[in-house]
Length: 165
Image (cartoon, rainbow, N blue to C red):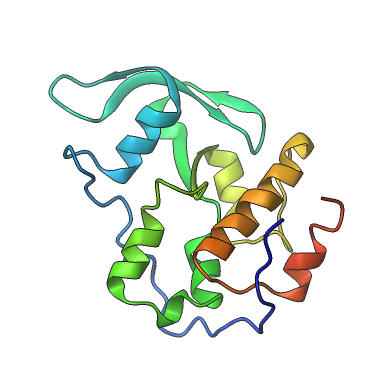
């Protein structure tokens, strides 16, 4: 598993979700959210002349559930935006925060049911783990990968949350 430097969390002063400009337009004119729904869905059908799905199914690995209502297929940031802010994104440029909030390359964006996304909220692994225990070690690996790629820090509590993986 990749390593992230341990540091005291930064202040939340100045934090706002909109500083990450999530769901930006991607090449081809679709938003990041629409791109994830298309990428991770099964039998996805878009509304005519649009990138917006009208139907399909999406698997939420956090709780081992399949979602078939588009509006209930939320997109989760593996490393929550607030956690990124506390871990170093507060020092980034607006362009860096936008790139992080719309990262389609790393395992940063994934489908989550409304209930799992709501229960996770802005929590990191020290305070939240998926109810799907079979995903715990993958979650640890992917979470650490994202933090490492983006040069974000971790806390001792976060690191000790993965002691079994």
